[in-house]
Length: 234
Ligand code: SAM
Image 1 (cartoon, rainbow, N blue to C red):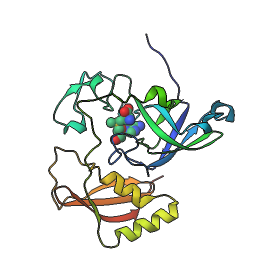
Image 2 (cartoon, protein in one colour; image 1 turned 30 degrees about the horizontal axis):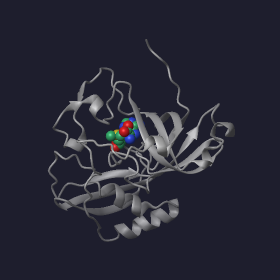
Image 3 (tube, helix red, strand yellow; image 1 turned 180 degrees about the vertical axis):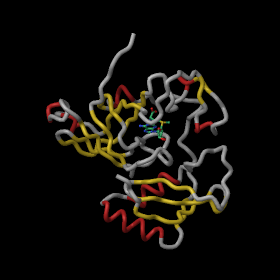
């Protein structure tokens, strides 16, 4: 039996590509975006009362990771990308129905638009439903997860030459905490764990309309090399 679902809205995100998005929400509080609701949910009625809520659950489609054939085992990046696990034991993006869920901070509510932070969502992500976080029901103090019991280990992020100045200037132009966003995302080391870092290799990711490049001068240390306005093709 098949069911059809329709998005209630779409994400406008600081993350324009998958690389360097944190692996879970709340890991980069400076990661901001909006959820643009579509008709009929863009009417203020659908969000009435939500201003009393600090966090929401978003159920969404991993629209850039959809696959036609089911996978029973996946190799989560968290385990270094070389150990496979049952798909239902992981939060991997490749899933039976391509559905993701994230609890994110709700900064502001307006008719047709939710302002969010701490997101781990790509630009254009279709959102299927929104539910208020209910602390007494959703918090589980005695919960454990033997594979993912602690947040990722952070590594130091340094800035080369004029990169920090450029990041500050772009942050002011965008009216966004860009320096914090870069530091929070890179400190989690977005590089696949199985790839040994070589100092000559440049890595890059697009945040808002800015391309950020960095390298690993030594294992366990990131240096931001340059920040430049992205060339966006229409
Ligand atoms: N918190 C969610 C969950 O548990 O279902 C997502 C976890 S998943 C491991 C996080 C990764 O999903 C991010 O690092 C990003 O690369 C990827 N991602 C985010 N939005 C996506 C989208 N719309 N399509 C495909 N991948 C996406």
